[in-house]
Length: 323
Image 1 (cartoon, helix red, strand yellow):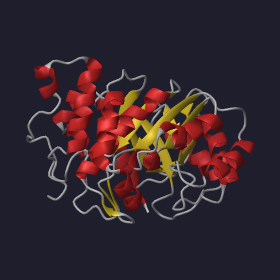
Image 2 (cartoon, helix red, strand yellow):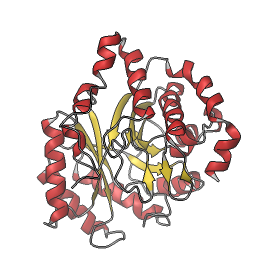
Image 3 (cartoon, helix red, strand yellow):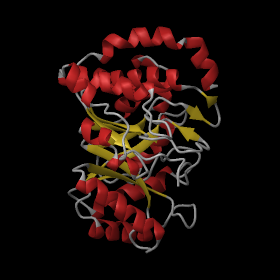
Image 4 (spheres, one colour):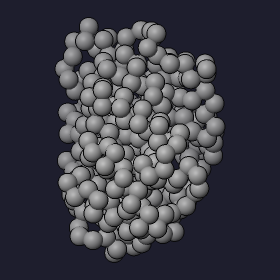
C-alpha cells in the first residue's frame, strides 16, 4: 500500500514543495535513535553535536543479569561519555515476548532507575499501539505501565503514549487515556506514516495526536525509510525526500519539542527495516546530507563549518558487515 501511494504522490514534486518549509527556523531539538554502539565512535556523531539519543531496552534488563544488561551498560556508558542525553524506551524481555505484570514492571523499572540514576527520559513501552506489541490490544495495561513508571521516577520525563500514527491510533489513545492517573503534559509518538506518505499537515496523524493530547510532544522515532519488508526497497532518494518532510512537519506546532530520527547506520542484512543515515560500510546517504544541509541553515554555518559536519570516513567508523 505504501509503495503505491508513494508512486502516486511523486517524490520529486514533493521534494520541491518541501524545500522552503525546511528552511524555517526549528522550534525543536533533533536527536537520533540507534541500537548499535558504533555511532559513539563515529566522528560525524561528535561533529553534529546532537544532545539527544534514544535506545529501546527490555523492561527487565536491570533486574536480570546477562548479555542484555551488559550491552545496555556499555551503550549508556558510551552515551554518558559522549555527553548525550538518552531517552530509554522499554519493550518485551529478550527471554520471552509479552507484557509483564504491574508489580514486575514496577520492580524492574525501579531497579533500572537505581542502576542508571542519570537517565531521566523514558517511554514506558515502545510503539504501544502497533500489532507487533503485546500492548496492541491492551491500552488499559499500557496505561498501567505509564502509571508505574511515573511512580518509580517522579522527577523524570515520562512520555505517555509512544504510539505510531497508525490506523488505530485515535481509538487506542482514547481507551488508554481513560486509565491514566493524572493528566500527562508530555506525550510521544512515531510518525513514520506521515513522513513517508508525505501527508499534508491538515491530514496528518501528527496533527491528530496533538488534538487528542495536551502539553509537549516528542516525535520519539521517525525517518525516511530505505527498506521495509512489507513494502520492499523504497530507496535512498525517497528516504532523503522523506527526511526533508520529517524536518518540516514540526514547524506547524510549537508543542513539538524533540524529533528523534531512526537510525544511524544500517545493519549488514536489513532483514525487515532500514531507515539509516549511513550505509553498512559507513558511507553517508542522501538522508544524512539532507540533515547536514538543514542543520547548516539552522545554525547559519559557513561552507567550511558545513563540510566539517561530514568528515571523511576514517578508522572510527564501523562497517556492520565486518566482524
